[in-house]
Picture 1 (cartoon, rainbow, N blue to C red):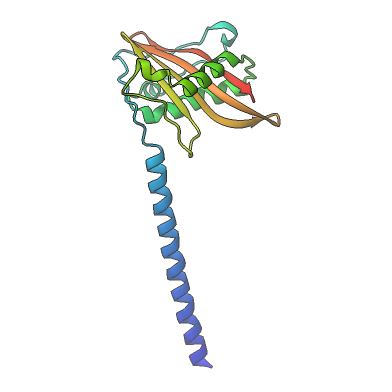
Picture 2: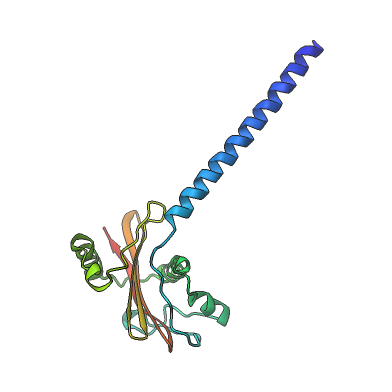
Length: 187
């Protein structure tokens, strides 16, 4: 009887080792896929300057968003494109929580046209829209003089049982960060 318990104990140990190895392999595979999926090709240098607290006062957005504190503004002004998603999602979550209803179907029409005709290549031959299966996010970055304009169509989400696409349109220059437009469009 003791021999049976010893054999079962060995089997349990082997199973635990196999499961641990499988978890490590799966985690490593997911990490690699995520890293490849999030590797953005567009690099943008944001003009140097002081990014002070900003209040959004464009159209119906007045008073909906305020950016607090230099630490947050510093994060918002990070040079790395990998932080754009955090930045835009923060703005959109806050806007959504305040009941933002300002929709811009024209933005998505232009986005569809750019995707179909690849017109973005005319202006930025070395840059392109980036989309990944992981984020379902599409970015467009333009530079004109000292102004950097970033337009992003973000993740498709369910809002009030309807499919919606969130978008954000922001500009940066030496005077700071401005949100030109944001909202969602029902599909």
